[in-house]
Image (cartoon, rainbow, N blue to C red; front, side, top):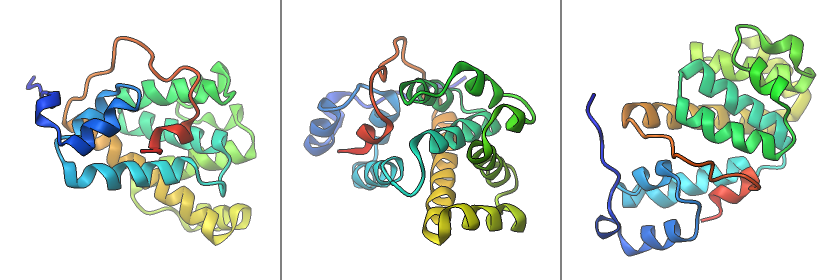
Length: 184
């Protein structure tokens, strides 16, 4: 299997290196460092979605974990399992998001988030019924936030898998909130 090397410090622009020096040393961020013009927008969009108050942090992490499962993104799964635990999501919920129908183990918001994540990841277009439920629960702005978040993490999972980004040997996100990661 081909391996895409992470950029060395010498290959990074000073701006990207400065941001990376002030963040957990995650391979995903370093790999995006190959693209200095994309780096800040990538970080800003991710950070704005992770910190958006329109969707509860736990509900959003449920959606991201479901994206990781449906797309087979092991790196995304590993990192967001850490973040999910940090925001109080239990092992039972994390495990349920890896089965065919996790809704029985989730509350109403979690089940909707998992459904939205699965439909968008699998079918691209969200069903009319799921979209109506999303708008009814969160309003138009909240629904747009959830859809964009799920779409963003679909992009991330495809980038991670296609670039063969390796999972770090240690858990670097313990004690961190999801919103901290995009504050670059």
